[in-house]
Image (tube, rainbow, N blue to C red; front, side, top):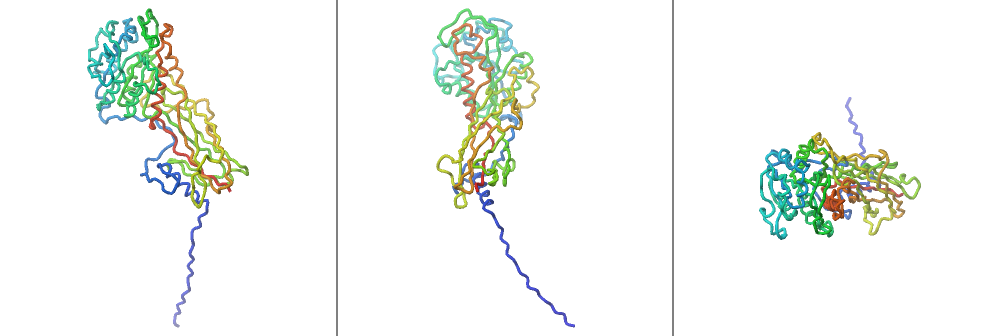
Amino acid sequence: MRAVLVVMPILLLSVSACTSESDRAYAEAQKCSAAITNGGDCSGNQTTVAPGPKETSSPQPSPKLDEPKKSSIEESRVYLDSTESMRGFASSSNSTFTKLIESISYAMPGCRLFKYGMTGKRKVPSEGKSDDFAREIRFSQDLRKPSFYDLDYNEDDMLFNRLTGENRSVRSVLITDGVYSAQQSELESEVVKAIDNWLRKGRFFGILVFTSPFKGQLYSENKRTWLDGVNVNARPFYAFVFSPDEKGFRDLRDNLSNEFKDMQSLVFPREAVFCPLNPKVKQGLEHKSVPPDSKFFLHMYNESIFGGKNSTELSYDLRCLPVANYPVAEFKVDVSLESYSWQQNSFKKAASSPQSDLTFSVETGTPQPMNMSSSSPGKQASPPPAASPVDVAPNQPSLKLTFQKDAGSPYSFYHVIFSFSSRTLRPTIRSLSTEDDSQIGEAEKTYRFYEFVSALTTAHLQDRATVKLPPPVFVALTNK
């Protein structure tokens, strides 16, 4: 029997993927989010930027700054303000002031000491030379004598700019009464500019705060004259620490902490404020892109998010928290919005303010109370983490955004933009400061110290590296 081969025809079906309009809208929202995050826009001509490291919304410890691999500090120096305004601190041979001068030589072994200040007519800072304002001396009993403090004035901005210009890893400490007399806008202070220049090099600045008996004459910046008969038990003085890295400051603070238990500290690290954000997901979520898998937050909701109403509310847990001993106690976060509508299969930016009738309220987290006199800072083996909020309900969102349904467009796309500013300094800083040093009763305070720290903090927060804002936030909504 002959075998018969029967060939059955095979019907090939061409199946094409069916992509919904919702999927296309989400894909466009992703493209827009990536473009905006990388400095572009939604116009179709996005700026191409090489991918960077993924952002994270979780607060991270403040990193160690620019620490060399071998030795973090090549040299240590002490500049002792030797003007007549410091003479009253040396009226007691066993005061906190005289003890610090002796102790700092042990806290920074091998440090060089300079008698700091000028005599005669005040000079323009650019005319100064290194031997004009600082003369190297030895540690001796002369530093305890009031007669040692015989110079007329100092030019701190000149010194600070000189330190900033050095390329070596040098830790420098200025012991001073911290009085600055600038009456103009505080942000124009040359001293503030000089310190800010140091910080923008990626270096660390910190202030150690002490109090000591003071007896003698006190110069009034208000009256431009000397006040006689000043005798107080606790006048503030300061150690301004310019360190190449945070470790150099911590080491000095820790070495001094056992002997000076009332010592306070203010710090200005490279990264000082962390703003973690956590979106609260609602019904109707269809798609999302979130860190750490994405450099941005993007949530897309279907029309059920409106629940039959003309508006919906999205909530976010947002806190802005300082590292320990940062001067600012409370922060302000402002929120603005950019909106885009769905036109011809792409998102087009609205020419005017969004029609979503955005309303919001922001409650930034209260930073953890810091004991600025920290009697045992030596226990900290690593940079302090961001503080934790207190007195804030853990499940209560701090940011609420209300969106109106856009009846004229099937999809809406929004970019939520955060901007940041400080609000108030810690109360302990106010307690150190006076605006009227012509009153002997105010001698236990520093003239305009609050204004000085406020101006320095404002300048510091203007550096984008100082505040770690959340990754960019985007929202896509289905209107119908």
